[in-house]
Length: 111
Length: 113
Image 1 (cartoon, rainbow over the protein chains, first blue to last red):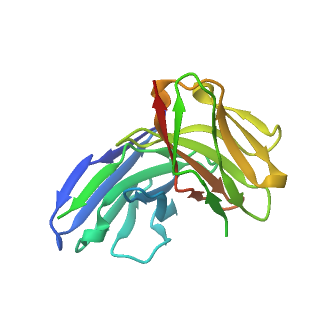
Image 2: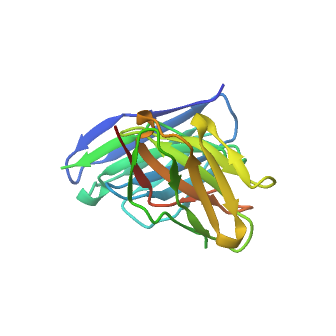
Image 3: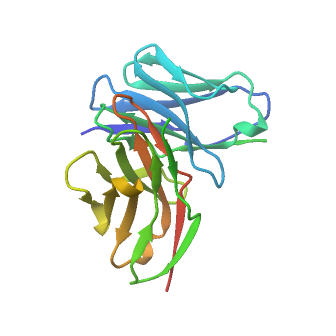
């Protein structure tokens, strides 16, 4: 069966520090991968999605970037975190049938 | 572009009472529609989805939703709410031919004893 792993679960980082969040999917090939952010009291905002290795589409211009170095690996990065980057980050995958499966999320607090 | 509106930010329902969460979408063609549930600090779990066919869709945990094209709605219902249903519920719309979902802002369900 397919599983999605996302880590770390929680992260506290100072302003100006770098960020790397990792998401991996097991049990499938060539999934579509997504990064969403959920700010406190708000809905889910799509940040990036990828339909294949090295292919990244950005939905919102911001301080973040994404990469897909391997078929089932999706990384969210920042060179210098801002306070406004705080939030709950969710990774998701689908095989195109719109049955999105979400990871358990990373709570990022920038201090 | 497609969009989703969940007009109720919070809803409180007594345990055992019926529930209806509202969702309206904006999309030119027949959309893919979804309901997800999120427990505090957790990821999202798919409750049900509509692609085509029967407009009344059954999901997990006793939930159902009805697609009404004339009203651009996809409301979520449950005949009898349990305390464990307290969570945040998100409606989402997918655009045919594209590989991404747009989510509503969510409705937080509180269940009173």
